[in-house]
Length: 290
Image 1 (spheres, helix red, strand yellow):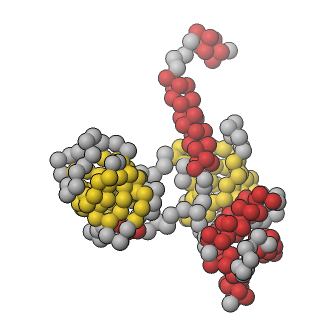
Image 2 (cartoon, rainbow, N blue to C red; image 1 turned 60 degrees about the horizontal axis):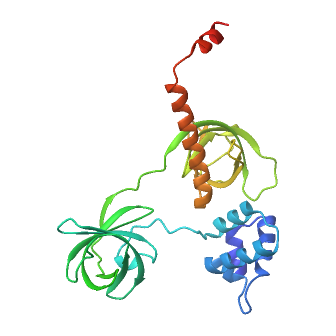
Image 3 (tube, rainbow, N blue to C red; image 1 turned 90 degrees about the vertical axis):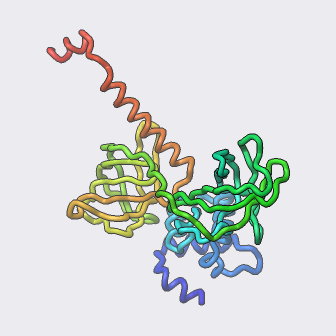
């Protein structure tokens, strides 16, 4: 079975070696096959590996993606309220218009528990509400009823009547013409230099160097604005303009790294706005004449 799974993955020598390093941190009784079928096992071994050895994050991420493990919630349309994970933020809106924000803390066969963080007074038992939530695919709601209230925790009935409202807003994206370097992820080959065309919290676009990037390629992208160096693993989601432009998606991307990127983007936007709004002075005029 293990040989069959490995043959389907078509791992490079470097990826196979990294898988062997991860296997050294398996718990007693766990087989190497568990690394390929369980993202919990993979992540546990990766955590131990980081704590004990030097390891390339880009190679580790590329291997995780090739196997099919992800650290993010799947982008799937929910079929029932029972699929909502603990920790998910929600908004309850009563028929009279009162709003209550909260977080799911537990799931049960007939009801889910929500810890409220706002709203006064708290809703009473029996009140009809609409519960709104979102995941990677959009914003949803379902009608339900408050079945129990204990201090700031309410229990609401489960529902399979899910209504889709709208796609989630995309991350802000800005045109940025920066030099960047790309190469196949988990590769030691020299990177190709090219030009970044735009950058956002979820992805980027760049000039396709020599047209060698193809849809589905997994790459290591690196660039160094004044805010510091970024080394990201990205996937080519499409190419355009007769193959001259490659459109990339960051996956996965930690919220810390996303915040760094968005901080840089907004700083650039503010800088551009200040330059546009600034009126020319006499010194500017003399410089232009000179």
